[in-house]
Length: 132
Image 1 (cartoon, rainbow, N blue to C red):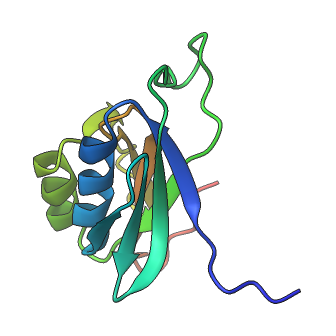
Image 2 (cartoon, rainbow, N blue to C red):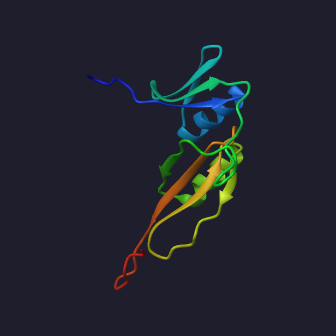
């Protein structure tokens, strides 16, 4: 089997808001096909969004509607990425831990309530041990 594209698809009651959000985050464009939108980056499919009028956002982390999938997006400049996703309509679910070395991340929700993380590498100071 040869897989041509790998696409994660999100359900959303507000199809336009969800697809615009992910197109903005990924620097892509929305291909609108009625009840289905594909976010294309450089012409390649990256994220799908399908209309689900009864969609209920997951209540992260322990609500009655559980998270089923999330994306980890590794970024070079966390402050810049944070400003961009917030301007596009994200909300912070869990602030970063403030690690001084190793990896760190901050948890967000997209407009439909799907959790995702912005992750980054915190440079290790010489002589320090990795967290964990």
